[in-house]
Image (cartoon, rainbow over all chains, first blue to last red; front, top):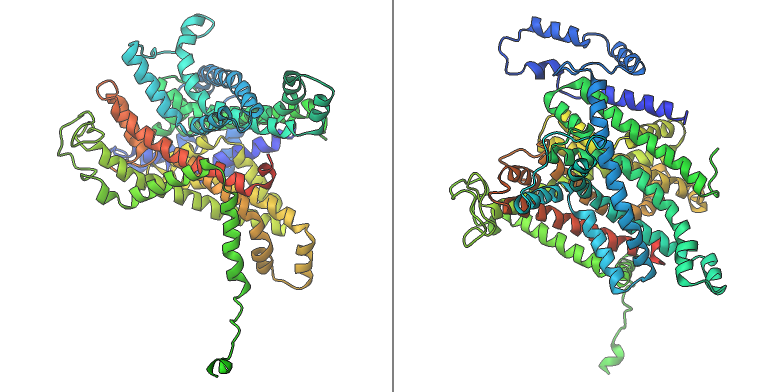
Length: 308
Length: 299
């Protein structure tokens, strides 16, 4: 886990440089269209934001702030960024976890079924369905879902987020549809992966041995094959959790949920650079931590892989 | 008498290359038993034709607002009209151009950038490789769409910037795959023999390295084309990609959200178009993998 430190530092440098070096000066953009903005007032704004300092100094100030748990304040609302992200985190987290749960409970049995009846009609149908699931834009699916519920059930998503601790049912009603829209692509990925690894494992010697010993097909599939086939699937799920947190941005926007992704997109439109910086780094950090944890878990699940 | 004088000149044997090329292609076709891949090719070709012949196929100007607003699909308007009185079918047809163009150019950027970096790192190794791979690792640490959103947003919302952002975000994936293949090739005896016989770097790369990375690259291009088209649609949907009035499927879908209950078809057609082309590339990728990936072929 300590190996993460250089990666995290590298990421913070990358985000910092990206925001500084890409064209588009924060102050120019903020004051665009305001005629009373003189060079003098712009200079004052730059100083107030600490943008007049040399780049390395700016970076070190930002980094020290982060280490103290203070990524600064929003340029737009003046709200401390840690507070804004703290409010957004549970929404994104719940959405992502619910989507993973939905996808996994459906995808793995379907993948096993597809593999154990290889080249049958069901398998072919499963493969095509998987490719379709991979191709449906989640934002289209979300839009259609909303269209359907609003026309048929006259249900529209509530304006503000209902916490699962205060109202579990209301929360589920609000989060189930966005989570389902988010889950479809992951489900397709998991299903395809399960099918491939199952086929690989079913061709192994120990599976033949198990069959030769007279184990029932069910026992062979679930006890001998699935256990080993799941290991790579788990790593894919872990990798996809990070992708989902990014993909959830667009779903959050559609369903009016104020998660991390929606906050990031809003901040980009507002030119709220400290917020963009912090939200992007935050998402990337979660992504890296999850991926590293999955790598470690992988070594635990599959003793053939040793971590130094 | 005359036939004894006939001089039989043996036909000059054809150069080896012209003879092997079609045979190799044939074997690819013979192995192509996967009907899914063929369906993918058909979808892609149809979309390319639609994009190329857009002015012929589209019944109206895509930006002409001369029609009644929010009409349902019907006689003269195959897919209805939008909130400004534009013909949705014509806009979908022209939208194919945007989607394919952005997808193709973004993947070209990723391919050229990623392959060059991967070749450099894998071939020369050492410090250069260390630094390149460190940067690639860091870029991999970001969820792709988030990075694309941030870059496109910072560069300013436009079609070209979305294209650049997507290409940049996908480059590390290409770099990593190419580098891996290059390092595997470098350990081969034929590579050693090429070096010993004095082949230049470029000759070694061209003759020995590139052919070996071709198969994984072809599969990657088809997969990332689908991803790039999806990302362009997502960015345009968020307002960070192609800007109105230019017809892009993601932008059309986004505009449709405000009129969803009034005219749901406005949301249905652009999304279906995105799905169809992405499906085409995913089908193709699936078929290609069966043909080109020897590890999976045996399954």
